[in-house]
Length: 181
Ligand SMILES: Nc1ncnc2c1ncn2[C@@H]1O[C@H](COP(=O)(O)OP(=O)(O)OP(=O)(O)O)[C@@H](O)[C@H]1O
Ligand SMILES: [Mg+2]
Image 1 (spheres, rainbow, N blue to C red):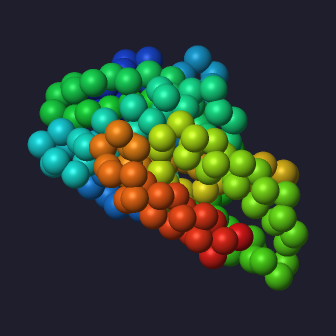
Image 2: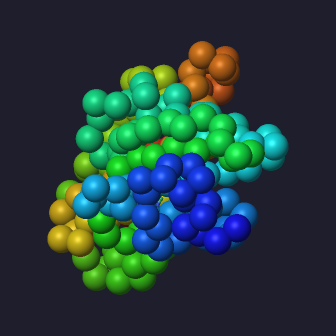
């Protein structure tokens, strides 16, 4: 199925702009609706890992809806034509993996690190951890003044694990951030 065809099937108002994903089988597209950019994620529902990813992302984004530093949920489509799909805010800029110029030596990323640290702590307080803080999942704005965590589909919710496991996930998140920036 061509990209625009897939997008139209999920929401006829959306225009495909460009692919953003790293894995072809899991479409993540930049799309446009009424002059604004968004991100459409549309994974196959019969893949348990992928559908769990999107269901988790939905729960997390709903719970964290007032947090700056993440891309907010705009719409959850549910299942359409064998795909589970959601629309979220688009963060302008590049993810860290696509921006080799964002190196510790070349830029002072300290303000961004502080920003991201605050977001991570706020997510932890909401009972959300295991944030998958990899270079692909953090987008830096074009002016390099702000950063957003763009993929919260791999999170673990506090109520689903024992207390010790949750603490370990939180510690790992802080280590991941330390390694990245
Ligand atoms: N809201 C967003 N704004 C801008 N770019 C985004 C946004 N969401 C995702 N992207 C880009 O799309 C890529 C893939 O999105 P995402 O990480 O959500 O998918 P994924 O299938 O979980 O990928 P992976 O398994 O590589 O983490 C990201 O690495 C990022 O470059
Ligand atoms: Mg990702």
